[in-house]
Length: 482
Image (tube, rainbow, N blue to C red; front, side):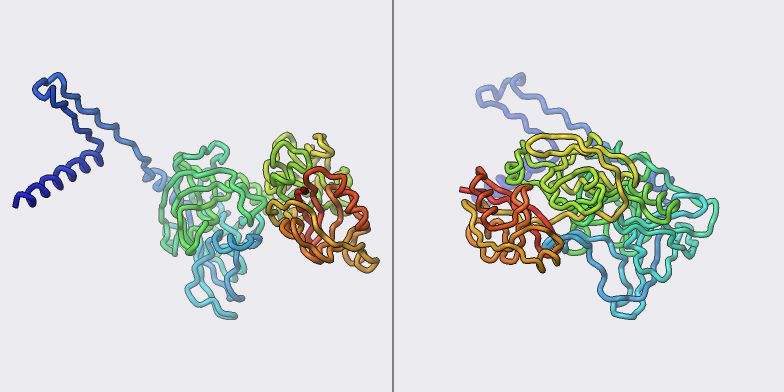
């Protein structure tokens, strides 16, 4: 009986201590020698000031009427498309919020889906995601007052995942446009949309990161948040606390297809530029220079004499392109555009794409161990292709058997030089070189024979960068030497 009572007393004391700790109370400790001295008793710690959480009710009341539900009807053309350009295993994790089908997605069968959008102008221009209305046969916009309007697709830009719709109405409620540049990481934000078809659903969170580059989108510096968004939220607005739209909810990172704590929004300034181009030109005008680029890792940085891994390494220059006219060469590393640094290769397409065709841009280029400025007049073409070079694993020496290209191979590959890898082992194989690869250059020096390759390797110091052509891709592979 005593043991039971003692155990109960201990349990109660422990629970009381847990309660106190959980609610911020601290127990005063009285030393034994001063037990009868009231002055020796420590004063209770002051209670922590309550944290004021934001109230989104005013925002919802003032801006919610401009958020719309978008219903789409389409004839199924096979499985729902995946996000393009994301290599496994990321392919399954980055998801655009495809409209939720109400019937099986089988060839030829009708499919109904739902997404979100918001009204830009009183006469009925609406912004949403391109993938919401992709292949749609009919689009219907539903307002919060339950009015339905058939919508016309004015324009779609798949690269930025932005679409512009038009409904025939007047005196509509509209959103206010904010500035993504003024948003700070940690700021509160809110999303309004139709997750799983549940119209006018409000969720909130904070900005987790800015200018986030995703593997599938070279032109969009995403706003990353922890706002709960799900299929059906696609195309809906992301608001700041002032009730201004700063982004369009577009993608999530998910293992299940549902929300897992990471969501991504297209900055509204990017979307507005797309909208303006679609309305004015019928397409989005983006600059181009005509290069194939790849990421600069630590080994490549050391090979080319850079102080750290940064910039976009040029692994190919198109014939007749603005880059060729400007004198850019294979092996150049583009470090900056118009005074802004290029930290990662994926930054370059977006920075060039923001320019208008015909504009004069200044590039900071690293060549032969020093930086120089190169002027280039932008052309107009699709996105620059980012070569996916395999990551090397600390080889210790170079080992390949090669032969020169014959005339037929040179004609097929459209190159005047190069050697074919017949056999590869050791460090070159570990670095990612495969039989059948064509070695076009070492660093930026063209190669025509096995003897030239051997001579260049003999003159190299601790590492080399091989320019490899594999199928239609060109990329550099760094190979450290013993």
